[in-house]
Length: 521
Image (cartoon, rainbow, N blue to C red; front, side):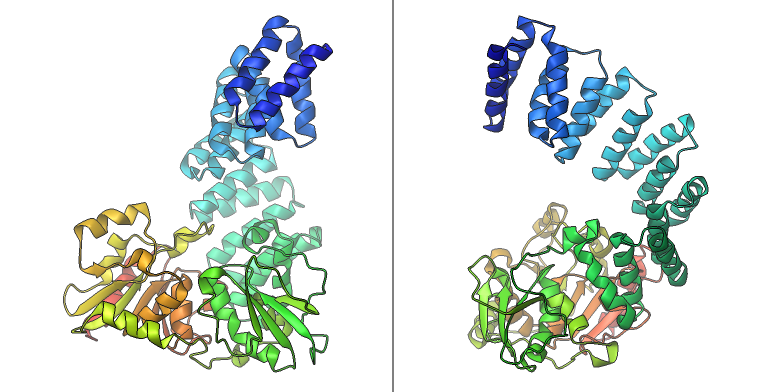
């Protein structure tokens, strides 16, 4: 390609990066229309950009190639791959679909098409695509493994296990298949088998942090803090876990209980959700009791709530400049650092204080109390991967609520789109929305309520930390902090747990809640 055309190409790429997509297309078309022989050179340049992980630049080039050449499956296939690397999965799917129509039996195209459907959570369609792949080639362990992963997402756990077993029969040293089969066994409460599978994965790949993290969750769920907490530190390196736990880089060492904190300053900070912060901030005063000066970095929605937390020398809102400190530790590593076991979990509640003026303000806003007040939370609005395990629609949740005898108050600040119509039609649940400015408002509202009923979100942690009677509705295999087979919680003495008796069975829980409410007006 001559220098003039090369300069035009760079101009097109700059235009695309600046948002002028149409202008970039016009320039590239001019290059190719000037001399169609430039197509091969443009193709190779796009590949070169991709090899340098410059996928947005590669997309510019291949979009133009794709618009001018409708018969070469390699172009939309590569374009789909570049889109996928940029996590633009809808665009990727469209490109893979085009490539598939041009070359229907190409396994690489089919595999990427199916994987993209999986990323888009279109799991039923992904299974159909994997079936087509397996009809063409049943001897590739990756195909069986990937379909197993999709069946897992569909909660078709027995089928997922069969597919992992087939993958392992083809490749016995497939560490990922051992670990993901372990996850599936864990969902079936076959914990000993799950841990054995994690151990097998780790024997094949000792630095396989995903397997270590999965094993930690299974151990912690069973209450084995001694072996589970050290492994839980692998969350910083496991791919899926690191999407939840944001690793921070500091120029000061992490403290995990070995060094003396006498006359030292330590930064404690949150790494995951707001509920996690509320649950684990109980350990701050234990750290202060070791002689430390504690700086607590607080997410802005919790800032007012944490103003008077015992043991804190100074709070800093996340995003503000940090003062000097000697050590740092995320809150969720404190149980390890403090050598906590179930029997030694601090249960002194309330450990969070509410603002009396806000409590009075919410009392006035609610008006005279004529019935027992129940606060409700049925779903999360976060992007948490397993949100479907802990969220219901309000229409489903309302099945647990007797029509008479109670005043119902929504404790959620936001509503999902699927719930908004319910509130337009039904007016028996009071909703305050943006009047809940932050968690100090939610806490003050809870203080004016008799009982909180919630799925596994941040609110029951707040309610439990305030010592308010709280009923928590849990899936068949819950988050590890709720443990197994018990109706109480070692974290919160005021909490009662309602557990699914089988996978996905919310109806039996809702029936029990309604029965208990009906007998307790």
